[in-house]
Length: 128
Image 1 (spheres, rainbow, N blue to C red):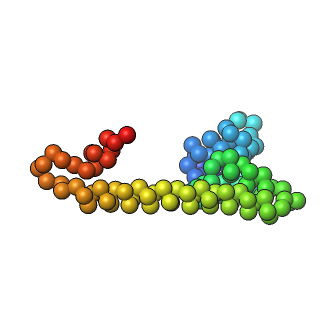
Image 2 (image 1 turned 90 degrees about the horizontal axis):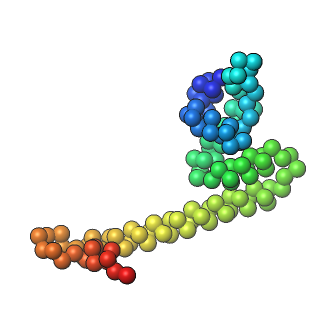
Image 3 (image 1 turned 60 degrees about the vertical axis):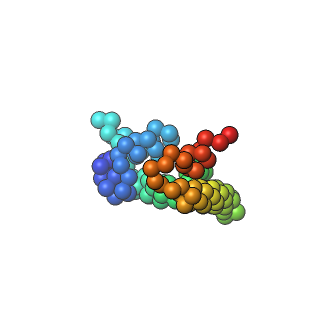
């Protein structure tokens, strides 16, 4: 498969596929003319990476997960640890977003939104 074939198959843009190659996540073979030649295993790895990235895993987490996937002697506890760490990051981010929503909801409710210059939103943003 060439890069456009594997891009269609995996749903990843060619630019992303080239980036994954540049950072060593995949290593497609090269034809004598220098063009990338993707094998079935490359397409599978790219689909794996696409799914992991869609779940928000970092590039380094993807590197770790891919290495674990390829290691048939891996311990599932190692995979679970990576996923648990990522889940904790998501939960922390959700808590931050909920706090931001609550604060903004309160400030929007407190602001009269009329022609007066007094605005609790600006006061809150300006506080030290």
